[in-house]
Amino acid sequence: MYIYNMKTVSLKIDDSIFKETDKILEGLKKSRNRYINEAIEYYNQIQKRAVLEKKLKRESELTREGAMEVLREFEAFEYDD
Image (tube, rainbow, N blue to C red; front, top):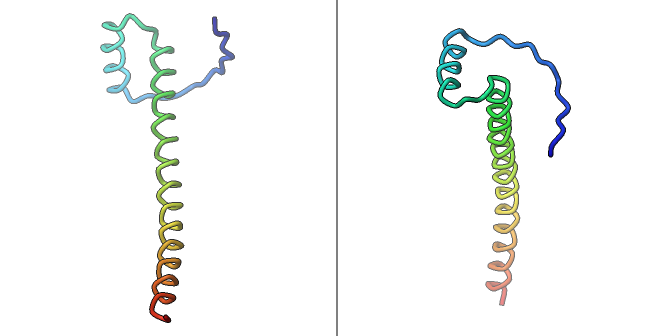
């Protein structure tokens, strides 16, 4: 059993999105509030993944630069013999 603390939010939704949402909800038998909560939760997950992807890409580039520097050092070492 989950107990949720809820916050009240007032938002303005484009009329076309509102109507489309209500049409979808008729078939889902789900409250508009629950649907919007699930939609925001899903969107938050997508945004977290995008932030993580950007961070990993940046760190990968930094690691690659370091690895290339080490490779150059090894190559220079091999030619010094």
